[in-house]
Amino acid sequence: MRKIHEVLRLHFEHGRSKREIARIINVSPSTVSDYVARAKLAGLSSPLPPECDDAALERLLFPPSEPSSVRRPAPAWPTVHNELRRKGVTLELLWQEYKAEQPDGYQYSTFCEHYRRWRQQLTTSMRQPVAMCYVRPVRSAQLSN
Image 1 (tube, rainbow, N blue to C red):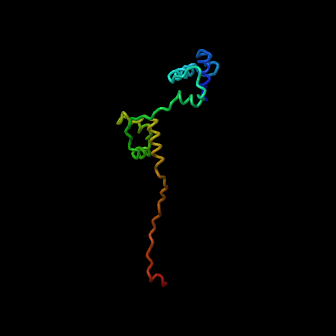
Image 2: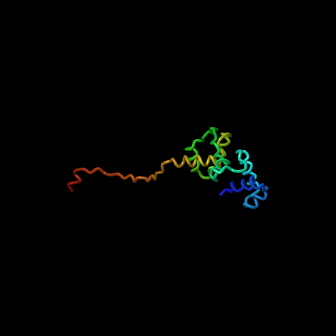
Image 3: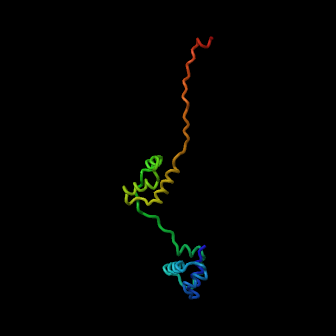
C-alpha cells in the first residue's frame, strides 16, 4: 500500500528532508520526491484537509489516464489467425510485418491483446468426420428369401 499520507505529513508538518522521509518510511527518495511534486501540482499544502483519506488522496494525486483518442489501423485478424497455423510463424513475426505496413499501428503488447480478444470471440467447435458408408437399397425380392 502506498504511504502517501505519511510522506506528506512528514514533509509538510515536520519539515523533514526527502532522504529522511525515505529512510523513515522505507521507500526510495525518488518516490518521496514524486509524491511531494504531485501534491504541489494538486495544490495541497499543510495541513492536509481532514476529509482527505488515503483513497481520496490517491485519486487526487494519481488521476486515471484518459484513453488514447488516436485510431490505429487494425490488421485482418482472420488472416493473422490463419497465418499462425503455419510452421515457424509467431505473433511477433506477424506484428513486425504489420508494423512495416502500418507504421502508426499498434505496438506489440497492444497487438497481442487485441488478437487475444478477437480470438476469444471465435466459436470453438470440434469437427468430427462422419464415416460415409453406402447403404444398398433393399428390393422386395431380397426380403422374401
